[in-house]
Length: 213
Image (tube, rainbow, N blue to C red; front, side):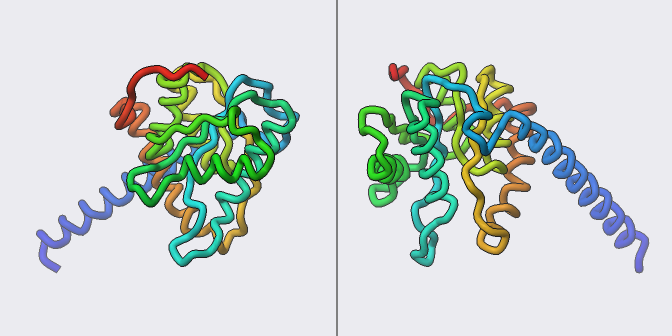
């Protein structure tokens, strides 16, 4: 091995180790915000509004998305038990044929939530956008976020660094086999969230006028 090649390999190993260490530390920091979440309705406060984070109703192969179904059930239970008066359903609506907020609204109505209690946020393209818009557009300085625990940890981390007293209500998770790809992706999402919040102070892609709820 030439000296130059050796230097390149050492530099690559140092870089990979540094990135790996950062990802580990970032994940530990974000996971610690799980202390603000609960899978028990008695473990979350009563609030005016809850934020339901969107995901696709079905998977790419047409099968039901277990994360979605469990998330809608958790949101409906939260409302039914009087823990919130409004549900802000926030998700992606970037194409005419794909509309997460409208899907969530329809399914929540089917689960017994009154239509007038549901508010659609069509600009929740990513978790940071949904969380920041919950305050900046819908005027909520506190609330409950509804998703699976691993997702709620990240949402609460973002929220509490943006002055939002957010608690998480954890929907039932899916099994390890069906959720593996999502869990792997979440490792990097947490690392990116720390950069967004603490380094870049990222803003939502879209804001706009306030909407009273």
